Image (cartoon, rainbow, N blue to C red; front, side, top):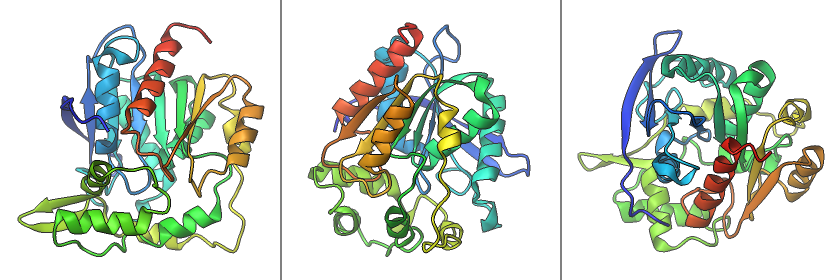
Length: 300
């Protein structure tokens, strides 16, 4: 994975409707003719996941220098942790995203959504369609496999506390090795450092462990709702769907159906990765940059 480029961004804070202080990373020029990009992370992930991708796009690889914003949902990264875990809810977070867009002055954007971020993007497509110029969905679709939810529920908020970075790396190899068969040692280290932080020799996750309470509400015996109507709302947009080769959340069958329903969509299967592809490898970054560049060239 390419880590030679140091991310250059402005760390910014804004207030949610309920007063909670939320955080975002703002890359690239604030103005310009090119459509800005908004990156939305997964459930227990943070804005930092997108640093390499955002730096590549902002520096010009996506058709020219452009603004890229990546966010920390409430309770993640540098955003405040919510005293009420029930607010770790997709509808509350969607309202936070609208507040962020207003705070940054972004009226229309290309959205890159990993897992939960892709769900947020589909919600935006249904409620604020004019805000979407194009979409990249990273390992998420209208059908969410229950085995993937079960696996995620098994570790979010329940990870043992490592004593060193090597402990953290070994932990991730143990819990995710079956899915991420193509990672090198430096990739595992990057994964661990994007999940944990160290302060004064003590390790903690970059997210509020109370997130696990929101997952406990899932009844894995009941079928999850299918989101085809929300997905169909993206039909008029340029779309790139990314799937990890070993994903247990987005099946190949669901990806195939997405491409049938959206004939103009593109797809990328990331070899040797599961849910969700890290978007740190050069081939994935290059593919996303090409897709974004084409959006503003009006080739679709």
